[in-house]
Length: 394
Image 1 (cartoon, rainbow, N blue to C red):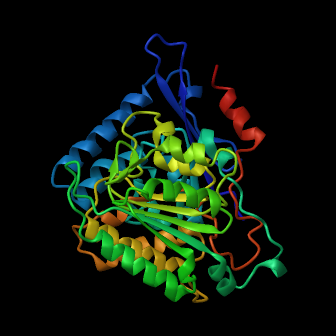
Image 2 (cartoon, rainbow, N blue to C red):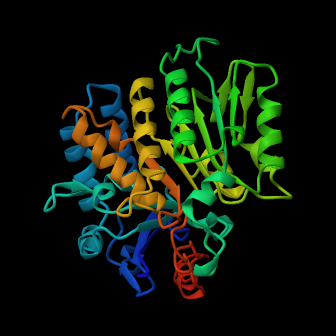
Image 3 (cartoon, rainbow, N blue to C red):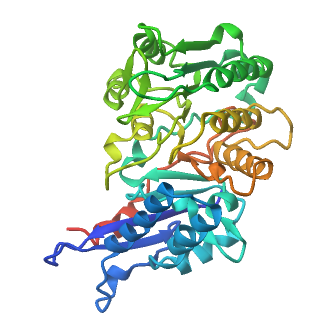
């Protein structure tokens, strides 16, 4: 498999009084493609440029956002304003192949880079995943079974455990989410019809007082066969909100500190579940906590999203994920990309909610492998890559 890893890394120039930040980026292990830091005559502050783009994005989200404004004010600028135009142009030949971006800037929506020639965003062209560069070594590589030992998809599904946690809201000033229960009921039907045993589909109502302890118990005692963790509800203070309480990042990490999860897929279907509100705040992000705890990937949303839209998108995603058709997408990245494309086709031209879902983790990972995935796991950057970074850091 090609080394489709794009590295985007910010360097702090401590030799300047105002502590400017510079950007370096490269593709694969073939050397630096862009490095303004190396050029002594370039002295612009990349940190201010990125802040301008994020300011534009935040202002648009407070107004009547349209796909055209998102494209022009954010997507095009991401490709051209940060000095990465040549790099993004060079990766277009890999369209359709899994692409992961390893970065220490997860606040920027890199998946929204817009390719004017193609008329598409990056996440439309590539099965895409994002990795916090400092945390990539904490993502457990999936087991590498020999092809003859890969179980039939039907057998894998029968052994799989699915955990669905939900809360319909309506307390502590949060609005009610009338479609959450429909989402849960539909997903349970989907899981059953796919071949997952009903006894292995575990459902937790967040309004019950035992919800939090039950969730923690399941992720520790059923970890071996736990394949999917799905949450539907509100996100509050970077935590999974339930009427009965909240599940915080630290709780998840502490519960799995000694025994990690066995590479399940986590889907956090709530507003701002993947958003980062402060620069470099990776440690307080739910997706980071699940990745540290052993998840293979975490699908989440960048912004506010209607509960009916969230319901429809999650149903479409799982239909693709659980499909047994020979030509169905198999990697998490390609499943998400296919769901995006279909959702975009079905919704109105003004609806850009299909862009709000992103994957933190490995886009090449197969939850239910059809063949030997020996080359399809996320490796930490090579020593050569890290040496390139260390040359510019003190």
